Length: 79
Image (cartoon, rainbow, N blue to C red; front, side):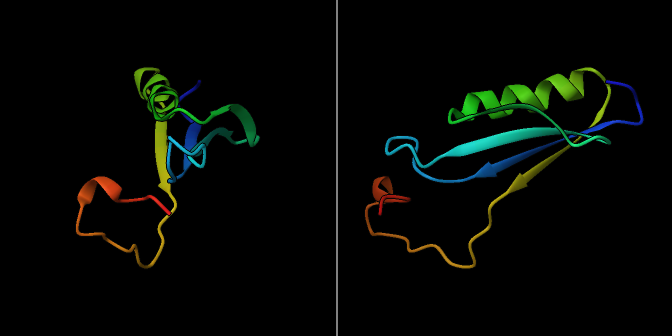
């Protein structure tokens, strides 16, 4: 990637166990989809590659306005 480029990694935060976690990486300008998946490690790798190349990078996270928090923290994110 050249220095004028940036990578945006968007993450839909969900449960990995139930398959509702997803991410996609897009390089701009050009809006080229470079990678996507359902593994959090893949999202981190897509971000790290851009940073290692010296490019700008953005991590965009889904941000619900409220998240129910159960007493048992291990159940967080479980529907």
